[in-house]
Length: 416
Image (tube, rainbow, N blue to C red; front, side):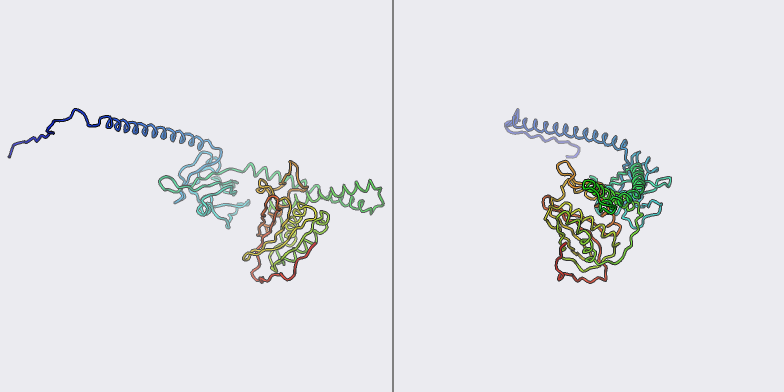
């Protein structure tokens, strides 16, 4: 009816009840809901406070860290954030991750054949311990060590954390140490050669017959002078290799000929230790290398294998091929390399210890020199070892393309 308002009311025939049919159940559900909401609120509050505290700690570490730390956008390589230490190391902050792709040699010339930081992180998403020379804001060369990690943020955005460490002090100390070692080695070499030669003549009784006691002492002194000569020569070799002053005469070499000549030369040393060097299968291949330095590298592996082999045991020498890669392997059956020492095998002056004492005498430079020589000849060196089952060291070079794939299987093994 136009202009009239109506109100419709409804109620149960028996009237409205004073309380629900099951009041305690309803009240319990309401109490549980209140408890859940309160607990969730408390948990979220604690989580937010803890997250804020962690952010404050991280911010303090980020600002006060003695190494440079920077955060980059992994998609466009732009700098997002950097700490003060990065500015103190490189001057103005690098505005792009690509800044670290440009590296230089010690003369300030750009290094062309070098995988950049962006390429490495795109390939492996991790970068550890890379040393390089970059130019700071003043144009001066700065030696740095880089550590990088690529991550995905919670919103799906890829970022790169980069740690930049200034290693100028370490490099300067290493340079001074190398200069000192080189100077001492050169000063020792000339008089040591004269002393060793004179003792050798006396030990061989070239200057007349000596009493037995004097002859024994002379021979001991001659052996010790020879050991000292080896140490001086090793020091000079490693210094030249690190400084890039060693010149190599790269020629085409027959691998089997080099192996046999090395085994023949080390025959007396093997006999003194009562060890047999057994030549197994040798591939008929040619490689490009410096013969003298390749023999030096192989001789270091052979002498180590003989030195760490038990008496009346064998040392096996053989080759393996995979594609155009050729490996010369030296296998011994001694105690093997302790697992804790494996990462130090090719470090300078590193020697494994047994029962708290050095197991064998040596300069600790042989394998370090071998590694540097193989890198210089565009090759590689490595090993496989199982404690208690000996070790197998190998030298790897690339076969010449024109070399045939024939193998000298029919030549049979030889022994020294």
